[in-house]
Length: 200
Image (cartoon, rainbow, N blue to C red):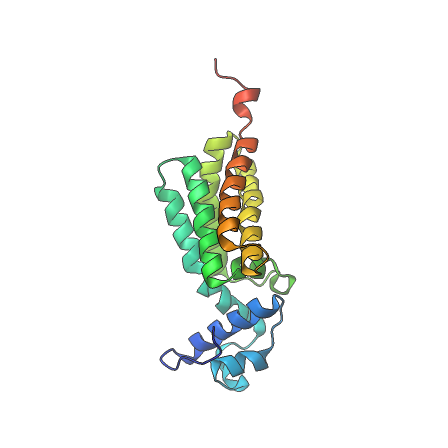
């Protein structure tokens, strides 16, 4: 975001996008509403008229990123194999965070939003998690609960890669290549059932 308001957008959209930019700059909540107002080109009172609390505002920010979660879910559903579903979903998630900023890696787990994440965001996240967990269950030959846990663990790889690339600590291309390699290795290391329980 370049700091100039886009007046072709609704004021609420400008506010949410400005809040996203302010959050990404600082990485913590609550965020500065003065900064949001300045970037969005609105008054603080207008922010409050659209978003009575900062929790409402940050849920608006999360809602901006729901299409990413839905794209990842759809990609996982349409992949040719379970292993491909996990790998391609991780790379698509990383690419989206690199383009739009790592809000999804930071905001949902911030203590400021504990118990206050919107139902719409939770539903999209749970749909994605369960879709990916079905692939994990197939690959790792584990229970549904263990499959969900494995996805939560694997999600940390694109999260951390996106944070490193976004922060300029590692070049984006190197981060993506390393993520792909690390993800494949993680899947291999978690696929122990053939060795433990050989066929026949």
